[in-house]
Length: 345
Ligand code: PEP
Ligand code: MN
Image (cartoon, rainbow, N blue to C red; front, side, top):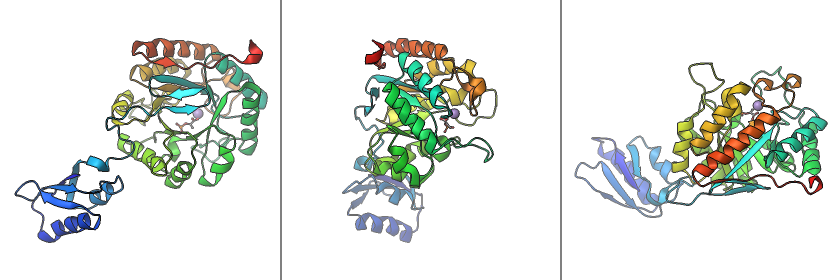
């Protein structure tokens, strides 16, 4: 590890850094004569890096060496996350689709069938909904989970659903094939740790005002527990303008593909906030290198209690999947499409 210390430090602060290094088992050597560039040779564990970063005498970690964090690309091949039929990363693009919230059992089965027939490999739908107001529809909770389990039994599609509370990880995990950690929960470290203790894939959404670094460190909490099955999701951050609901950060998508081996997908629905903008934003995300999409789809948005204005029709969803096939082919990637059901053949 290579550290840059603050300029002109008093001896006792330099000694604090050296003492920590010794305690953690490093040999230390200054590479300059002003005692500013400190080389550490030793165990190089990822959890040692923040120990140095937290010292006010340390200005920056110039080279993390072996202490690189677990999410870092570091020359590694893509992590491929497999969930049911879906594959994310390593040249595979997959599409998740469904309603914002689970509201009605029959409707859910109908949507599951429809999006699956158009290529979706996973069904999304919240049983617990994180809402801005405590008076808005909060989701059907346990009953919603049962509807999701029923939709999978009827159609064979895998389930992505949000877990809001660390105490619910076991019961949501009994139904979900992939946990969704929503934007409002990205900084809930007890929740990140709890899903990290499972070996179930996690869809981690970027916080509404979170930096890319904070996003990656949220993933690091899950990785540090030993769960490597993480798909990052860019869903737009709060901008200075409300023409769109959020500002889709396509630059972050392109950056993340270089900075981490974890797959990255885009949620054009929560970025757009309006159904007519979902398709172009989906295209933008894929063009920036996203390994997939998560799209809100509903045949009758007028009947729903959450996010109806950004739901696209099944037909529009089909067009988005066709775009994805064309865009993925541009850089030799492949969209993993749901296999037709036996019963439908
Ligand atoms: C959702 O997926 O319906 C949702 C609430 O998304 P986000 O956490 O990105 O706001
Ligand atoms: Mn939603």
